[in-house]
Length: 298
Image (cartoon, rainbow, N blue to C red):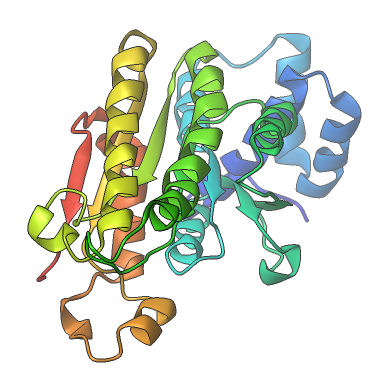
């Protein structure tokens, strides 16, 4: 495939996505692999490659190239095959970004350009750190991390023993913390920092709603606190954590668990994915509000 010089907006996105891959490979001195990309992406990419190698990058074009290069992000997503995860993954891929997706079963994730799936047990702290390290080794950085692994359980205070609380802490808080910690460490070392997006919940912010899902609400309240602590520690390093707190997301599993609910008031996962992408990149990066409520009509 010969990739001609771009003349339209979509062409620019495609063109510089390929150039970005070569740039990152060169930055890690993987020239053999970079040459492999060049054989695929053709003459236009080779011009950029040779300019980089021989130090003759056109002064008048470099600002445009660098601006678009920065727009192509490396996005790490956990829970990528969940009800919300699939929408978030597609949202970033459609934006031309590289997505490193953590899944439990590789067979559940279709092959797609820009998508790099890995198996991960988020309950294994060492595996989580290794996953982050491997992502950086392969892609050079982590610009955005969207941590979506979670679960839900009903139960009032009288119905909920500590074992139930512990189970929700494991799936909602531990799964986020064990990835967020090494991601924060990596982003703190990056010149441009990074954005960590966590998923909260309305019951964690509204005791009236939370009284019916006590263990779930408690676990999600810790996610809110984690975001606050990340923001305090990352303030001077441009590492920002944001919690997106939806009411009920319209997913097949939620419909199965709540067959009598009014689905019309629930949040469309595609719309929530757009919100997550907005706060992660572009103009949305300026937002510093730690909790964004996505309640819709509920």
